[in-house]
Image 1 (cartoon, helix red, strand yellow):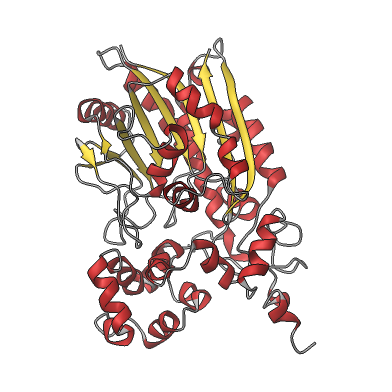
Image 2 (image 1 turned 180 degrees about the vertical axis):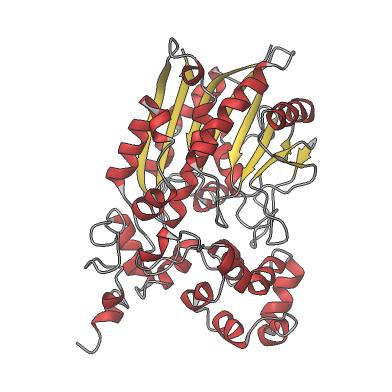
Length: 285
Length: 146
């Protein structure tokens, strides 16, 4: 059977993608950030998954105001990196896993989560920057990726609790797939940042780290954090952190208190452009 | 019964909810059109003519022409949509975000390098933090005339 063995969490700041694409990773501004991902790139090589289930948000790229799905699962065979206004990123196309994705859609919808099934979708920096951070600049991504887009752009956005519960349903869905597959689930976005208005540039290091502590050790309580706390304390775009709870909810200790997770890596850095970057790798132990 | 909008007492922050989205529908969809290279070229050649193809309000068009992003947000724009205009003009997210504070690009960049804007005094309207209405514009621009 397929199983989720690990979860990865990372911010997905577009400027990080630009720094990689323009060869600026060793510049003094960016060097400390990329140093925080050196362990992670090695870990990815040592623990290569068969499939990555990648939770991210679309930033007005595939989804305009024509349609705003709360949760959208990509079931296509491949996904093209999007032109977000300055040309597409020069990264490999994303190969999907239509069979597992369709299986997860079927199972999760039967568990009462109303997913939108997407067979054609360009993927933006929300998905490609985490891949670049974890995999570097390969000619092809190391494995198939199932894109899972969450609406955190137009309110109402899903609650942390809803995301956490959805993660649990995704774990069950993966475990009911017959083929022996090693699946990683990634939660991306955050941490504290605000890209708008007089409060632009807000960073809340103390809140971010307290939230991280709680998400690791007591995710069921963390999931109860209301939207307004994210927005007030971590900035209007800090609400992206609800997506991390999908990945966290899919870990085994949530379903079985006799199990635990181990923290393989934790990193926090300010700033990347306007944003506090958080990164975490958890393994089922 | 009115919907609960607890986010309305946060200084310097507009939450893109269904009401804002309705106001900004055409503005934001115009922004989406800039994801095509040929449209970006057409827009840059004659911004006014390009904007006139969209059923936007004159106020919204002015906000785009003057790159007044705070105004565009108040009129229903969303930052991820508006970012397409910035990208068309070659502006980074940091330049766009910084422009909304009144700070110069250098001042805003320095604030971020020093750890970003503090949360203290910036949680609720009525406090005394840097994002409060009584402290706008920020940076050197706010000190002129003192």
